[in-house]
Length: 481
Image (cartoon, rainbow, N blue to C red; front, side):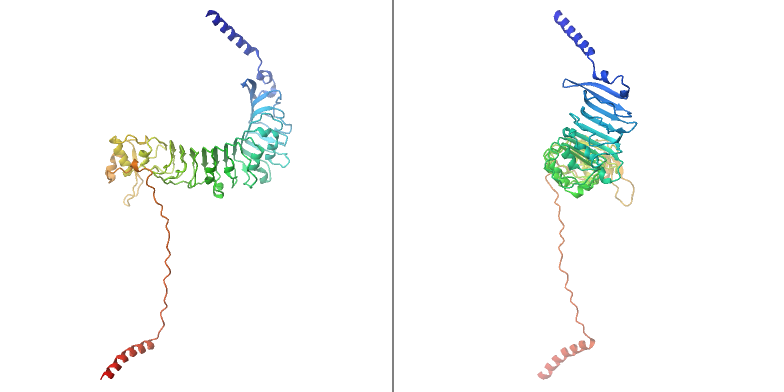
C-alpha cells in the first residue's frame, strides 16, 4: 500500500513537471512581440491537438498570422483603423472560427479568404465595407472561394456599404446556399436580401437546420419546403413575405421543423398551420386580437406558445383542443389590465404554466365565480396555480350610469355583483366536444318586384265607363216591362 502511494505521487510529480516544461503556443508566439500586444491568447487542446484562441481588440492592422499554428478562433473587434484585406491576411491558415466586429473593411477582393483550411464558422457584425474589389463589386463574390465549401455557420449582422448602386448591396439567398453547400446555420440581420428569382433550388440547403432572417428587406422568400432539414425558422420584420406567398401553409411540408418565431410581422391570425413536428411557436409583437377554438388542432405536438406583445382580447376555452401536451403559455400584454383568458382554462389546463404581467387581472364573470367556489370548497383541487383565492378580478362596468374604468373587486365579493347559477360552467367532461358552428351567411336574393305601370286614363274616359255600366241594367229593365 505504501509503495503504491509513493508510485502514484511520483507519477503525479512527473506529469506536473512535464506540463510546466512543455512550451505553449501562446508563450512562444504571442507574449513579447509588440504587434500582438492588443491580442489575448489562450492555449487549448481539442481532441488531443494543440490549438489557440486569439482575440484582438483595438487593432490598427492585421496581425501576422502564422500558417504553422492551428487556430481554433480568431476574433478582431473595435478596430482603430481600416482593415486592409488586399494582402490576404488569412491565406493558408488552419482556422475554425473567424469573427470580425465593429471594424471598417477595405479592399475586399476575390482572394481575401482563399485557402483557409478547416474553416467552419464566420461572423461579420456591425461593420462597414468601405471598398470592394471583387469581379462584380458585390460582397457575395467572396463566398465563391473554396474556403467556404466547408463552412457550417454564417452570421452577417448590421453590414453597411459605401456603394452607390443599391442593387450591389443585396445578397441572393438561393445563390448563397449554393455557394455554401455544407451550411447548417444561417443568420442574416439588417442586411439586404434580393427577392426570390425562381432559380433551380432542388439541391440547395441540404444540411440547413437553422435559418434566421431579420429585417432583410425582401418581399418574397424562396419556397421554404425545399429546405427539408430545417428545424428552426426565425423571421422578424418581414410582413410582406407572408402576403406574397403561402408561407405558413408550407410549413407542414417540413418534416423536421420544431420551432418557429414570427415576430413583428403584422400577423392578425395563424391560419392553415398544419404540422406534426412543431413544438414551440413564438408569435410575439404581431396584431393578433383573439385565439379562436381549435386554432392549433393540427399542431398536436405544441408544448410552448408565446403570444406576448399582441393586442389580445380573448383566448377561447377550446383554443388548445387537439394539443397533446401544452406546457407553457406566455401572454405578456401592455395594452390592457384584463386577462384575455377564458376562465375555464384555469380548470381545463391546471398544469399549464401561464406567464403574464403581474398587473393583469382575471375577468370577473360567472365562470370565475364557479372556479372560486370549486377552489374554496376543495371540490376540484386541480386548478391552475395562477389562480389565488385572495386575488382580485376586473369587473367590466358597462352601465350608462357609471362611465368609469373597470372596477377591481375581490373574488369573495363576486356574489354581490353577479347573479349566477350553481351550474358548473367549466365542465371538463364537455371540453373539446362541442365545436361552435360557424354559419356562413348566404344572402338569398329575392327577385325584384314587378313594377306595373298603371294605365293612364282621362276623366272623360272614366265617366264613359261609369254610364256604360249603368245603362246596361236599365236596358234589361225596359225589355222586361
